[in-house]
Amino acid sequence: MIQLVDINVVFSLLVKNHVHHTISWQWWEKREDGSVGMCLLCRMGILRLLTNNKAMNGQAILPEAALKAWDSFSADPRTTWVATPERSHEMYFRRFVMGRKSTPNLWTDAWLAALAESMAIGLTSFDSGFNQFQLKDFELLKGETE
Image (cartoon, rainbow, N blue to C red; front, side, top):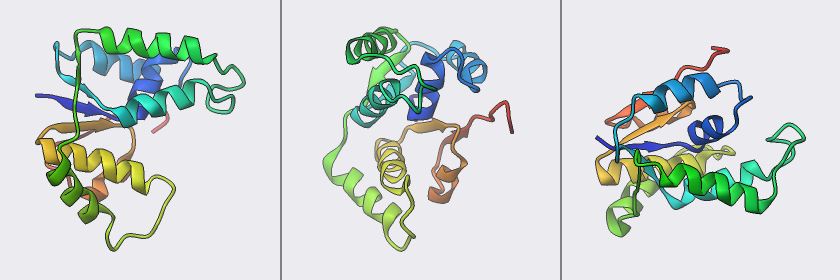
């Protein structure tokens, strides 16, 4: 089964000194070919974080290096591209944001959750906030500090 991967999982995979690197690497090593779903939102989030000085603890990398890191990740046979189905995704997305208080991650989290639900695939993240969407297949990775 495909597991759509949250930005925080990929980021911790790519940054060796990240607090969750070991846990995400253990998860990654167990994945079969074609089982890690990627999407445009994930790609943009990774590129943004890798080039952000604060996220990278003062060691942001140049855009060329960020693209190279993404290319390396996405070329791995474990990854597969997940395209957005227009109608069903929008229905889930609206359902996941309606009636909720606005939080900094509401929009991106709801978008990823809607993609997973509309495609009937899983979602993997370190963010327990996804529990609010009551997804059919959500895998919460437990961090080393938890």
